[in-house]
Length: 103
Image 1 (cartoon, rainbow, N blue to C red):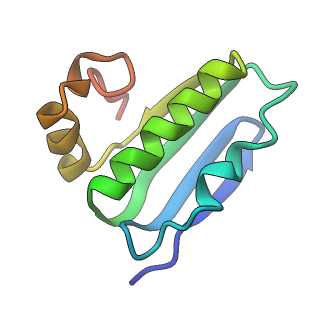
Image 2: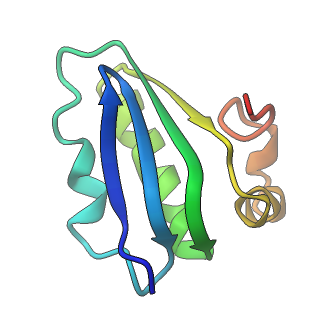
Image 3: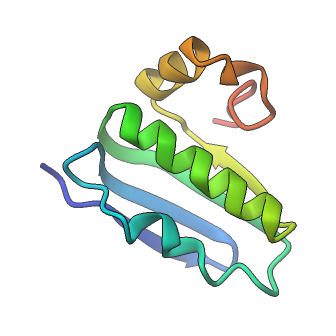
């Protein structure tokens, strides 16, 4: 299992590295966006994600919820095909977060 790591590359631009799976996500992971106050926009690049499952999709949905609550524009970049397929099965492919991946 590749450990999950969210790294700020520049203000508001993050890369996510590792696995977005049940094994790598714990109950503290969704709180990694606890610092959203005072920021207008965040982009998360998922190009370094090694493996995904439904827990990864659940984490992304939680981040979307947190960003909406904080009124922060959230954008995902380079979403892995497996996550896009899970989003489609869940009907989320029609949302702005998954409909057009800005790869």
